[in-house]
Amino acid sequence: MDVYADNAATTKMSRTAVNAMLPYLDECYGNPSSLYSLGQQAAEALQKARETVARCLVCEPREITFTSGGSEADNQAITSAATLGAKRGKKHIISTTFEHHAVLNTLKRLQAQGFDVTLLDVHENGIVSADEVAAAIRPDTCLVTIMYANNEIGSIQPIAEIGSVCRQKGVLFHTDAVQAAGHLPIDVKQQNIDMLSLSAHKFHGPKGVGLLYARKGIPLTNLIEGGAQERGKRAGTENVAGIVSMAVALQEATAHLDENAQIVGALRDRLIEGLSRIPHSILNGDRTHRLPGNVSLCFEGIEGESLLLLLDQRGICASSGSACTSASLDPSHVLLAIGRPPEIAHGSLRLSLCEWNTPEQIDYMLEQIPQVVEYLRGMSPIWRDLQEGKKRYVIQ
Amino acid sequence: MLYSEKVMDHFTHPRNVGVIEDADGVGEAGNPVCGDIMKIYLKVQNGIIEDVKFNTFGCGSAIASSSMATELIKGKPIAEAMTLTNKAVAEALDGLPAHKMHCSVLAEEAIRDALKDYCNKKGISFDEAASVAVQAATVADVEGKKESKNNQA
Image (cartoon, rainbow over all chains, first blue to last red; front, side, top):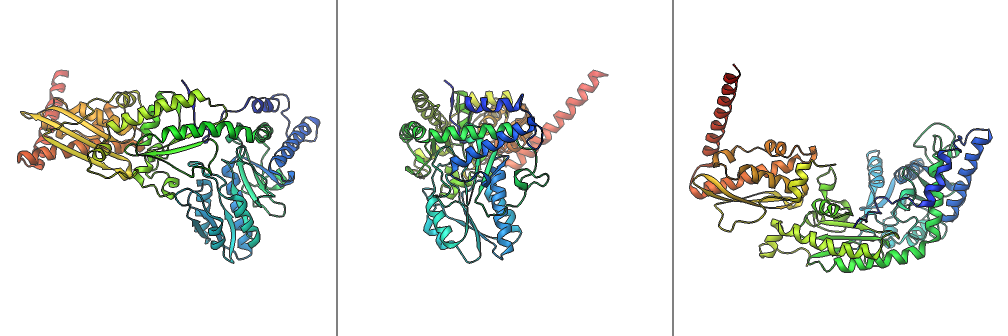
């Protein structure tokens, strides 16, 4: 059986999203900046897409800037807030220890330019508290940037509360909603969000396209200079097919949000319950405040990459926060941030589901994963030491 | 594909997995914090490695390197096992990705550690034995090259 359980990495495009983009790769190939009707058709499609996504986020079309994806949107949001802050002599930014690298590495660059960055603790359950955000805000704070939901452990942050704290204190609030968009409710007005990033391929849209919402009145700093596209804030001929497709995908996901959350949440709960029966395993991230599709566990005594390779052999696509799955030698900064020791973080497994996963696939994973964990533990010297009492279990 | 077919073969069907309870030499390399630990068990008779087993906590290439390294020394004289290099392990696996080369280094270190343990138990100086082994290997290599030259001539 084949199971795609890595929807947090990317999703399969929906049929509607594929069909929506096809005309703009084919007969409607005009440049939206061109005056003749072929170009204006593209310009209209772009405008319609902007209106659609604005409705989904509850904002105005002109508050949307289309980008190449979530990373670019994160970079532009943070850079813009920092530029604005620096002009006013405010060079302090608040974020968390488990943000995506698109945020953390942008903050690192700003630190090198003289900004002061406070990274808040996310606690064992992977949730930052709005009170701690409030306590960290200083007179020179120019930005709070906190993700809506974590990509590895799925924990959902109290975004509306953080937004309200920031609004009261007059500090800009940006949220990286790449994992949340299309899966959790978004209302930028009600949630007091000043800037928000999202990426189309996380909700059955195409790769290479995303957007930045920035409340009107917030001046954006260009990352790409050139023509006057996107009100002069993001140069380069627009990815018309991608943008149109993203709008359709977001609309589709938003329309079925509650229904999908129910279906996916039920699959997730069965998977969590079943996998938690594996001895010496632990769930990462809050049990209830979590993305409908996220399952993340650590298994003591094994290493994640070998787990993924064996699951791949059995048709299961999953991911891990093990160092060996990347070119770096450190395990996932997210798992370290919630207090998992490195040797435990190496043994992590993330399964991320979508509404197209089936109960049969869950049964299959519940049959296969415990077998593979047991097999790898059987050849693990650490597991042997634990079993013989030479070492103490970290996970009880 | 990240790994060669050989690596995948040794990863999915690892040779010599296990533990030797009355081993003549036991060695370990790596660190759980870094995500790799290899343990090697040797059974030696008349200077020959009669049996070798391994236990590994680590990624696919760590398990494959352990498997290949044990295959390379099984049935070989101690002196020959002492000359095993990480390069030889990686080459036998048809290469490893650059950031996975340390897995083959770990295999070399774990085997060396097990041989050291064996020498200690037997009261032999490992360094002396190893240098003799390397010299012998070099001599054999030179002789081999001479011979093949002569054959060509």
